[in-house]
Image (cartoon, rainbow, N blue to C red; front, side, top):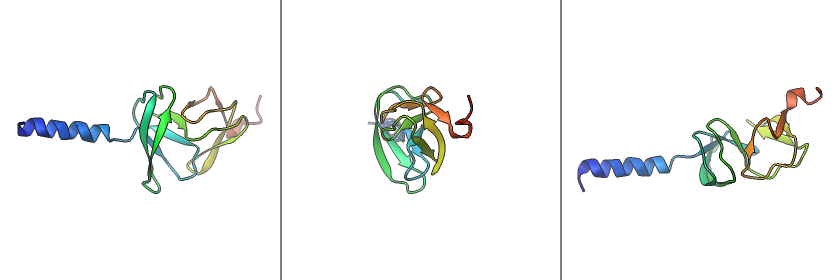
Length: 112
């Protein structure tokens, strides 16, 4: 194998080991996609501790969107950055896409 082929192989290995998600804080209920992610098992890294976990993603998650790290009950507070960011509009299963279709902003929880 040429040096160029070897270097290309190493770059591909590095890219495949890149995390699909970042989690801001231990205790957060969601992780943020750092690339478009398809269903399957993906690496996620906690930014505050650098701990790595594997997430089983159930549906496509677009870049910048969130995935649930654990099951969330309807009405449950959703935590990100160690702070409440919203309330679950309905039950959310671990690995599901978390966005405006299934959470409501905590700021506007008393609005119509």
